[in-house]
Picture (tube, helix red, strand yellow):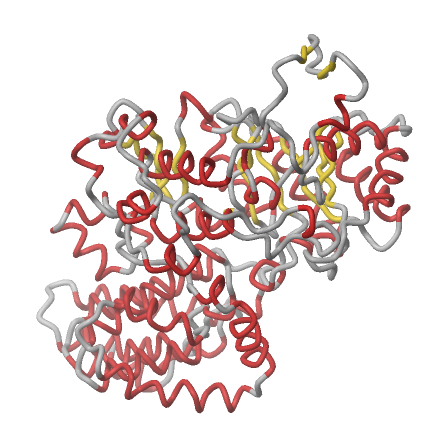
Length: 577
């Protein structure tokens, strides 16, 4: 925004992640005053809730899902929502609608975590579901609803898809000039994009702004593509990371009352290319970014990622990379140097960023603290920049391996976890990131913690896994029946604490409530319920009969409604009762 961008999109945030937050005014940000959306304490596992109850700072130190500067961003921020269901999208949109200027449905992300949850580009194959989401949101939220899509397999299908979205209530459509399956290194299909936009603009049924996106790494690219296609606006993603100052406008231009930019001469359209004098050095751009990261107390892993992206052109299309050579930085900084940094302060020192300008607004009390999450749900691996080919190869090998082989490797990790017994569940999960954890490997780690007699560690890890699933929607890491059975059985053997065991059962219900697919439901059998009822039987709680009876009726309810046939009460259930 400081460089001249008109609207900004948030990163894609999954519906479940934002719905489980509460809106908090951050009083530690000094004169800036931000709105933080933080996970509600009740969305954490019961054992974490109890820690929060005794340590108020633990909740307030958690990393927000999104932080908004209302004075600067409220009228310019589009909340980008990852969702695959109208039922999940609506509560998410209602949560943030008063702090943003629009809601955008991401229908273009081809990443596995997004598609496997029925989100992103999966919606391009399900027009009725995509339209249902748009229709429900446009009728119930008080801000415009837009969509970001990709080119479909042919132009008529793309036009048909856009037309249906507009009819459903979309206020704007952004189109990326690639199809699902096209890599970032392949040139965008800009000629196709131009043709699609021309067809849409000539249609009387399309009366909303059309935004074009793809491979515009220079201002003249933006001006020319907009003029060729007749699009209303351009959207930048990777080019904005490559050099954010691309948004800087010439000083000698004027804007009419419709927002149209006019230049003094026609050649202005081609004057600002890859060597434009409007562009700042990348060293200066990184310094400007770090000043904002410091001021808003950014999360160091996120900040490192952005700085590394700014330093490289590795994701630039091959036909453009020659125009954007690697830049030498003021002090010879390298990506390897950045990866060694462990705090915002060390990054600022490396890039000669002092506490000045924007950074001066951060409060003294907050400036020296690192952002710490009660459950670290962020994923970061320095090899993403230092050795991307090896990391990509490792990911591909793990994705293609037979399930038995994955189970064998995760079983070998039992010894690894022995040496990490004193670590919390969130730190264990962070250590496991290099192994690309899934529910199988996480279950093995939980089992190892249980064998070590450390049930609190097992509960912490379960909480971390749940948090990661809620934040990313990645079904590969979603806790399953074995996960909860392990924990409940461990609790029944380690101590008779029926309340803690019952909390785990209720946590299963909470995950099932936000599940859109029957295949992802967690249906524990009657053994788990029997264990909890038996624990109540041995307890000295005065209301243990009522609690056990309530569980019994819950089992009957699940069984009779055919929600979970595995929970049918048996003779052990009745004996416990």
